[in-house]
Image 1 (cartoon, rainbow, N blue to C red):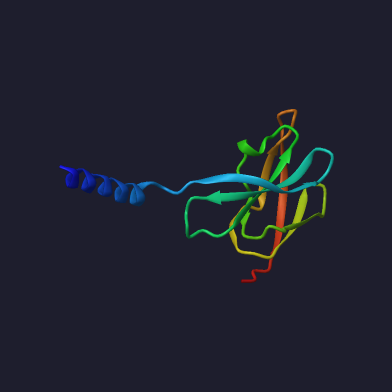
Image 2: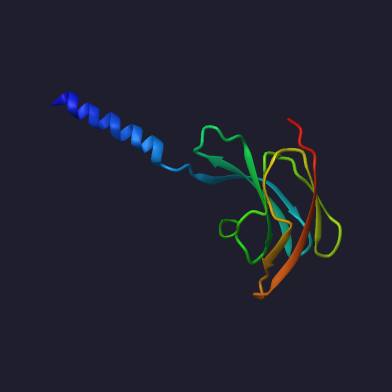
Length: 129
């Protein structure tokens, strides 16, 4: 009876390990850079339950009306030290020295009055292993 119970527990453990998906959660903030009076660039560390994943950092353009938990990142990379420079009223230029996992260069950010503000992002990527 004990060996049967042990076999069931081992089988349940193996099935859980195979079928439970990996999860990602947001960690500490690594960057907060104001872009103008209303908008800021924010970066957060991402923790994953996947043992094969390397360090990841997600970056957001936020206004005073938006919260980082409610938004999706426009850039996910292995570079913790992304450098950003605002090149126009609604354009940002980034320098990334790491692997890019996800990138969107056309952003719509909600403002306090409910309107959406359009941002364009250009990126220079220098992937160094």
